[in-house]
Image (tube, rainbow, N blue to C red; front, side, top):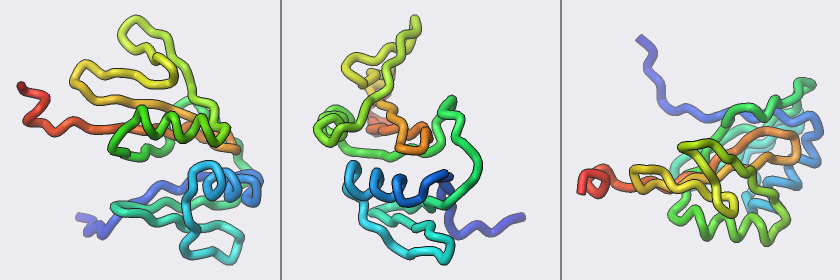
Length: 133
């Protein structure tokens, strides 16, 4: 059995300089450990992710990473003020309004693509005790 210490997404970037500018200027993230290939590890309160140079192109068809935030609506407003375009979805049971979806259990979510086409989610969780109320 694996004895996993931690796990973190690895996000590909065809243009590492452009991608770093997106994450650092649009999202306000501070770079951590820089890799010899130009990649960078971003660390925050309870996690991290690696942004690495890649020849591959992101499909943008599925969520590749999710950030948990306290207030999705406020985070969406911040992103929009920094020029980030939010994804809009319109399905019978899943519809965004101004970039935000209200989940049946009270959670909220939003999605945007980074400069490389990677689909990133924002989520705010509702404690399980509150869901049962």
